Image (tube, rainbow, N blue to C red; front, side, top):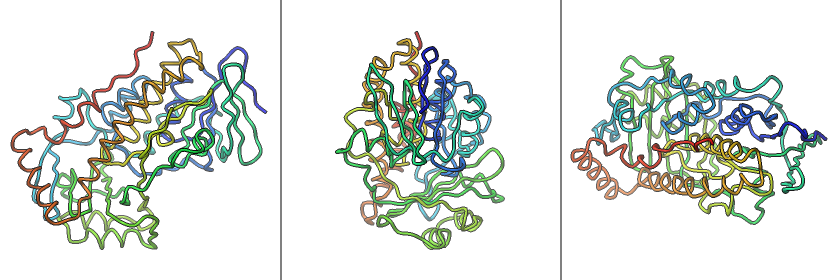
Length: 396
């Protein structure tokens, strides 16, 4: 069993997703000896793309990679929210987001963000093929311990659980708590070459229970995503064909974007969310973050950004308390649980409106969006004020 050092504080981070890697990088920067345990045999770019919002960029600034991600920004000019026939319901722009929140919305591949975070870790910190199956949270007098499927055991002053929506650690710490529930819709994602008229692809299109979005990447490609109301658990032999069947008659260039993807490169995932918040984001010496703590729908694009907030706030609270885990983790719950619960609920409300299916309800929704856009050009981004205005915990 690997034991914690008596001189250097030790942390085990479970999960090499964006939140876990950010926590590992932040803690390493504060002098912790960090080990990241990842169940997969390779760090894969699951999710294809990610929107790093101004709040996420501020979190990355504290780790030292904010400007590296800002350099990936490709959004220029006006974006639009449209109907399937192409009619514009509302518009916004990258400049409006920058002016309102002080930073752009950066759409990047997940691989780019993961690579930037991995570069902040020391050699050997990441251990692949290490699936954590059990945890002893420890207490003020003894370390936390984790066990992996291959029989290895580790002990540390702190365990950070970033092991995702089906978190094994959450299940051990809160065995009676309900798991994330199905949101009623599924998603497809892909990255494809940009068509000739790439500018016209910027934004989202809302239909009856269906959404299609497309954003440019700095390397000239397009990241697209689609959602549709579907029963939970459906599998598709050819996910691209399914997306074409759903969106093939929508405005250009949506059919072209879908057709440009290889069937094997279209990622399909059902959407789940934490309908019932956890009673705490910690137990003993274990802290949960990201989807393991507060799974949310993708409608605000905040899943990864909230995980980044979790990571840097956790590190700052520990630093401000001299590494005293027993004192810092209750403060972490008190800070992060109310905020993320509010963001989860806001995202769910947005998702519910986007997935309306009834003809009358959709017509009324579209009319309201057009009217509000005429009255206020910032209609599309005003609801994000309390989300994107976040600032990291000040360090003492």
